[in-house]
Length: 50
Figure 1 (cartoon, helix red, strand yellow):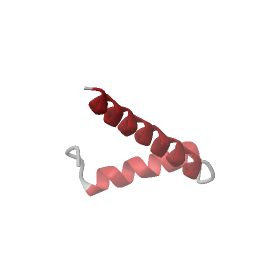
Figure 2 (tube, rainbow, N blue to C red):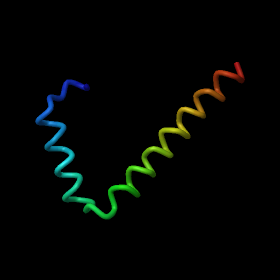
Figure 3 (cartoon, rainbow, N blue to C red):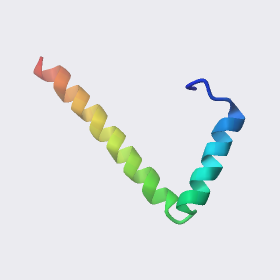
């Protein structure tokens, strides 16, 4: 996955947990998921227009 090993991913997740705090993580993850869904929907709409 992007050339990252398991330990690097774990380290990134720990840093994110410290930075955002456990209480905000679900909200942040939800916002990221909404952004990804919106991006994918935009790609699908673009393909339909062509």
